Length: 161
Image 1 (cartoon, rainbow, N blue to C red):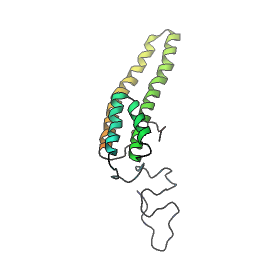
Image 2 (cartoon, helix red, strand yellow):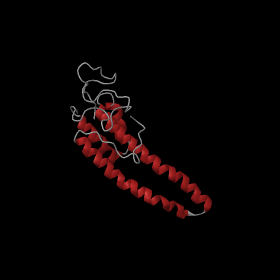
Image 3 (cartoon, helix red, strand yellow):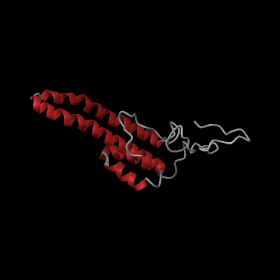
Image 4 (cartoon, rainbow, N blue to C red):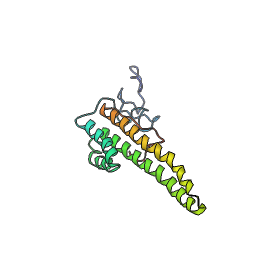
């Protein structure tokens, strides 16, 4: 995950922070892969409950719960901010992936006088109906364990950090 401590007498690279996974490494940009915000298991207080609330609220109320929790807790907890941003990114991605084909196919179906074109949207809607429950429940389970977990990129584009 991170480089071992340099041998005695050897100068460490400027980004190295003596074994801390929090150290900045320019090779990875925002941090090493698989470690989006800190070492595993350093979740304090109610952070797990807030992160679970993000995903459960997202299932019940859509983007409202993650948005509210993101703005309330973003400066207090990196763990909650990560999961709230993850849920918001998921909701925004799904909205874009559903609206763009709808905006393209409905006028096309009207102009071509072919209402059957709208049926092409059914597989997309079915995918997102099933994926919503699968990914949000899986993310809630990971958050409940105190883990950082990213949803697959094709369903969750990183727009909010």
